Image (cartoon, rainbow, N blue to C red; front, side, top):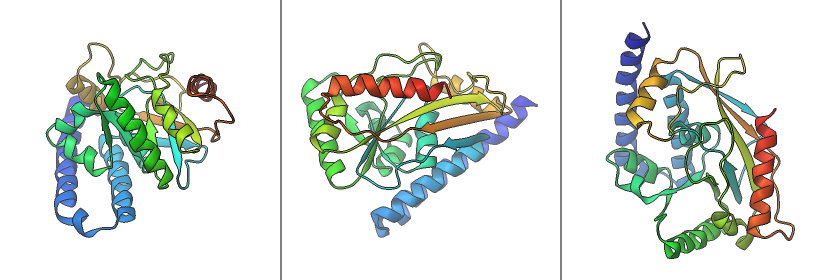
Length: 245
């Protein structure tokens, strides 16, 4: 039954991706940025439902920018969940921009791309983020820099937090968990870490029978004189606290 359900969901996901591409090609050129953002959020919410993932939001996502959201990173599905709760512009590795289909969808969502191997490009992205925050955008980053297993946080990198300091913008910590229904037990269905493949992660997610993604939004913080390293450590501690709720 799990396999039959997964195949049916996979077919519906493929159709949903095609509909997303058609919206981008045919409708986005005529829409304002606000309307585009609304379409992206609605599309992400529908994708979660199509995959069979229930979204549970605790706390209040930033109603408007400027705001930099920082979250722990577990799966490729994290971006979809955060978009579904509140549209935001992600900062992501440049490789994604070149991915067929997914790169087009990510770019349409307003993604800012960074060449991780280049320190100079990281500085360029920090400046771009600061400009976007000053323009009132809501941005989101995964300061771990890669996915973890969800049991413990990886060390946070502080570089991109500098953008919030430069723009005098607040930062909102967000804790993300995948759970088995209402049991409170962690689910590994959407895990995408180490040697795991995207295809394998997608298949496990499609086979899952009662998968819930929980987003817990903390209180926004201001730098209050902290440098990026001290602030990043405090943000990591805040997310660790949210994960224990």
